[in-house]
Length: 103
Image (cartoon, rainbow, N blue to C red; front, side, top):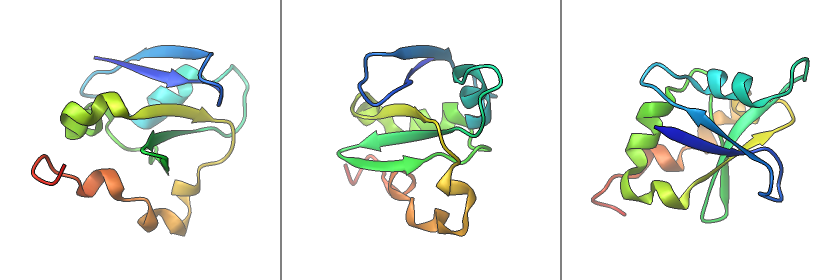
């Protein structure tokens, strides 16, 4: 499986990351960021809602959960520390509660 990650907001610069069942979000971030670059995180955007992905998240499983809606989700490398690593993480739950029956 290949994950397209946009490296800037304008969606013109991107990279494609190979995803296996063992690939974590941290692996994706390390693959995408420049050598020596500081704090970065991966964010997904769906229908105007943005959610940071926790570093220990298994990306293959995460992408599978989106099912046919996966094509509607865009992933961005954000060049800042992840808010998901703070105590505010609980408010970023929308993809985890979706199920094929509800979509």
